[in-house]
Length: 583
Image (cartoon, rainbow, N blue to C red; front, side, top):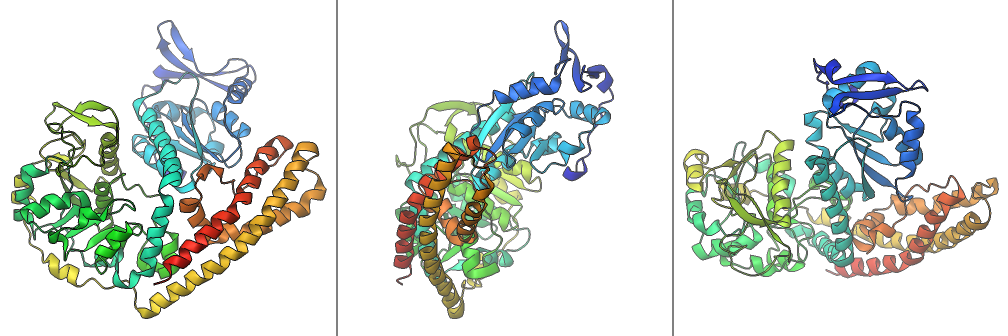
């Protein structure tokens, strides 16, 4: 499969496992030998596979909007083709085929070029491809925020990997909905604050330039086992980059151990977690949308990472590569892990990363905060014995496991000395790490002292000019939205009572495109869709699929409601940006 850079492994016994028959209409029929107690299993109709697949596809309940399909099973490709014909042309298919030998057998006897080369289809056939299946789908969900649906091809049985990916996608969709309803506007306000106080901060890529090659990192999390070995950190100070997550700071403060960096990412997490004496001179690795009070507390010590489109427009390439849709693991420790990867650190040591209860406690600080009301469940601990965890912690654990699969060059050492087993990590005590891993010395204080400020006065002035331009753009978009609402109402009426394909409508469709283009070309649209519009699934598709009246009606109903409400969202966004600029 040249497009994928993969070479399929041919099973020497494939002829004993599979055979191809020819249907009465000339199409291929795949047979798996001795798959049933009664004999062979035929995966397609012997009469008309395409008609059978079309009837199956017609039964799939999928809304008429941009959709990502998780499909288990390639079969002969006939079921996938039926879905491709039924669904919108912007539908994307992530096809998980558990049998590499089966797919290889098919490639030898049938021409699959059209499917393999189709950009809408992402095939996961080999072990190395399937390891990335969940990660790639999550990236698609985070970047494009489509609808999503899991479908199992006839005669395939589900498996843990496919089910796990579908469950992760469902959680992302629900999380996106909840985030947009409750917290996203707070996050954008924090981002606006960061833009307007950037003169006192630093950019993460500048830190990367200063980090010595080969230095290990220790991520200090706040799990209950942290108190077992926190004192051993003294032996590692100056021999590794010690990154303390915000909630672990209180424990380090108790014992008087000063980390090299502290990390905080959340817009709503209280800055009280950071208000400790040991952190008075410590820089903070921060998301641009970290709590405003935390930004004030670390006014001249913020190192901003995870830049998005806005930061790139304001400050240019100095902010680093834009990482839209990046998986930060769902917590500060996960974000710190990704930060280490971005810094080029290949040895990452985890402590306080229990991901499980210890004697009923969930955090080392003993506070009963940050714990959702979800059921506990037993999973394997580092010593092979069961420990009590929950779905949230299991998701964090799976994040680390995904990262290790994706980045085999990483050495991840779990020195928590308790908690859940993170598969792929090397389990050691922190004492062993101090003696055998962290053996070189580094002048980390000197490294951090060389970190430059993000922008000079000229750069800050240019960023403010860009923001003033955004304020003017919003006024234009308000006007366009009002016109779009009227236009969509008119087109909806046509779709209901006349013919949406009437050539006389060409001018209206052109006007529709002309009015929407400034919105979709504007960075304001990113702010709206990622942070400000509270129902993200109310946003109409960029491409209107209006091949007939039936398709057009839901498209224009959605668009009419959206553009009718958009001026209100734009006006409130403008007021917040103006307020943030009053520095």
